[in-house]
Each structure stands twice: as C-alpha cells, then as structure tokens.
Amino acid sequence: MNDLHDANVEAIDLLIDARWVVPVSPPGCVLEHHSVAVRDGRILAVLPTAQTHTAYVASERVCLPAHALIPGLVNLHTHAAMALMRGYADDMTLTQWLQQRIWPAEAKHVSAQFVYDGTLLACAEMLRGGITCFNDMYLYPAEAARAATEMGMRAALGLVVVDVPTAYAADAEDYVTKGLALRDALRDHPLLSFCMAPHAPDTVSDKTFSRLITLAEELDLPVHMHVHETADEIAQSIAQHGVRPLERLRRLGLVGPNLIAVHAIHLTPEEIALLVKNGSSVAHCPSSNLKFANGFAPVANMLAEGVNVGLGTDGSASNNRLDLFQEMRLAALLAKALSGDALALPAHRALAMATLDGARALRLDHAIGSIEQGKFADLTAVEYSAPEMLPCYNPITQLVYGAGRENVSHVWVAGRLLVENRELKSRQKNDLKKLGILWQNRLSMETKA
Image 1: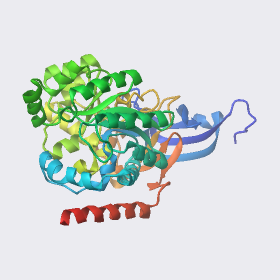
Image 2: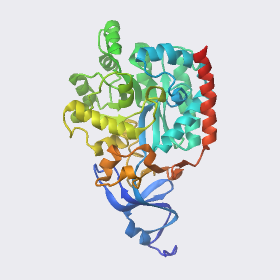
Image 3: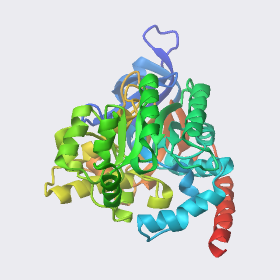
C-alpha cells in the first residue's frame, strides 16, 4: 500500500482507471488500461494503470473495467429552455413551426421562470447523455446560467440580440445592455463563458450588427448565430440586401475567427473558402436539419477544406433529443452518403467534432475538449458491457456507430462527479418530472384554447 510519507507518491483527489482512455488528441489514439489522475479539478496525468500504485494515493478511486473514458461532450448549439416545448410542434415546415406554434407560445409563456425550469430539464438530459458543456442561445440568459451552475454544468451563454421586442428586452440596445451586465456580473465564474448571439441575419439590422462587431472585438467574444439555415433565408437576403447572408456578414466585418455559423447548410464552394480563409467555425446540427427538411450541410467538403466543424443538437423543440451520440452517428453517415466517400468523416473525426472541435469554436480548447494534462477533468465514461456494445473490436468506431447515450455511466465536470451509474447526483427525477408536467399543462391549455 502506498505511504503518504513516501516522497515519490503524490496525494491526489481522484484516480479513474478505465479499460480504454480515448483522449481525442492525438487523433484516433486509444490508451488501453490507462488511468486519469485528477487534482483540484484538473487532469494531473494520464498513465498506465499499472504505474498508478507507485505514483499516487487518491482520496477517491473509480474503477471502470468495461468502459471507455472520453472527454465530456460539447454541444455547440442549443436553445436549452426549449426542452419545455419538446414535441409541442412536430411534423411542420420551419415557417409553420415558427409562425403558428413557437412564436405565439413564446410570446405568452416565456419568462425567467420558464427559462430556469426548462434549462434545468435540459441540463439533466444533457448530463445523462455525457454532455458537459453547452453553447446556449435564448432569452433570459441569467436564468440559464443559474440553472446550469446549480447542475454543475459548463455553459457558454449567448448574449441574445434581435431587433424585435420580447418580454425580456424592449429593443436591440436593451438586449445588449442586459447581456453585457450579465457578463460583467458572471465573467469570473469557473463554469461560464459568453458569446455574442445575434439571432440570425434576417432578424438583426446592419446598425445592430455594427454595434455587436465592436463589442465582440473589444471583449474578444465568439459570435454565435444562425447562418444559411434555409433557402428562403438566402432568397430574402438577396431581395432585401442584394447579396447572400454570408456575403452581407462579410461586408459588415462579421466573418472572422469569432464567428460560429450555426447550420450553414446552403454553402457554395466560394463560401466554404471564405470560412476557411477567415478561420470561422460551423455548428453542424444534422437532426434538426433533417427534421425540417432544410437540406444537407456540405460537411465533407468543409472538413476537406479545413473548416472547424463542431456538433450541436439545436433545441428540443426542433430535434426532440439533446443527444450528441445521435448527432455524431448522423453526421458521419450523412457525410459519407452525400460525398460518396466512406472515408469522408471517420469515427475519430466525428468524436473530435463532438468534443475538441466544439471547444475550439468556443475558444475553450485550452481548458476542455480532450484528456490532456492541465485541462479540466470534464470526463464521460461509456460502458461497453451491454449486449448492444459487444463484441468490441474498435472502441472509437463502437462509440460513434454503436453506442447511445444510454451507455453513459459516469460524468464529471472539473473533477466533480455529476452522474454515477447512470443517475444524476444533484437532482431528483421526481422534481424534474413535476416541472415537465407543470409546463406541459400550461402549454396544452394554450393549444386547446
């Protein structure tokens, strides 16, 4: 047994032994029978399990003999509070969905309490599915921050701006003022970061964009927005501005390393080259794109040209699942089918899109997204002992093509255990169920009326 007085033995907080450690960096690497040592919430070392006995004495040791330990997944685009609208408006076109159901319901029901409750529900779902960080875009971001931090989850909060009044803000300047006040109040919180979040080119004016460009540059914040989601959006931009939305954004100075272009479905080769040249990122949301029949993002071409592409779920109202395992598998299969190249998006790249590439888009890759010394211990364990996970010839391909969120057993954020043996440690299921039923009843009354 290790002796604390042995000069060669270090005292640490946590030691996780796994059948496989998949660090993501370097690409495709699988470390068999390795352990991750954690101290003060950060990864101290990744080393063979056989060496740990003489190197460390841990306050807690977790043995995962039939598991892969991967970085916590990064959801690069969602509207978390819309978990309360899951299934509220299915099997509609995007225009019908927005105009007939979502916007009227939001106008009546969205409040600080709605956002807090909905984000709690979303965080519970995401954590149980191995997601440790999400990039949010919705009203009342202070309430999303409160819910996320109570759940112990990492969040990149979108400081939402549109040129339309809502219950949250009266005009564009009001959105900006409230967003900046939130950032100032919470900028030092260890689990929070921020993005400017103009909703989309068709909901934000040139004047507002100019203001946001200045702020994003001064504060060095990513700019997270929907871009080229539909063919109608592009046609309207040409009619109103004489150019496609991405070209309008380029002229305004928004296309740069700060930009996270969400969806980016309808891109020409020249537009892909523009994103590469300017170091912009894309948040690819394959399930949402498919559900609305908005088209197929040219992901294989983007990756081949060097665009940084992360994965997002979009909101529950337009996907129904906050499930990055589903998005990894869909992204890989769609890229192969559409390009006619089975090698277009290999499994290890899909995993990187759901982890390190998403972190890179948020400028968090120095801190999360891979299992490396010095980074936060944001970790997800996936169990391979269920029948659907056997046999396992390649842990990474099995993870992307065979695993589901139901196979996630443990989740840590900054070394804090948030999911243990598939159960949340911070919230009771009954509490979350009551929230879901409460809001279901309220929105159902709206439908009947």
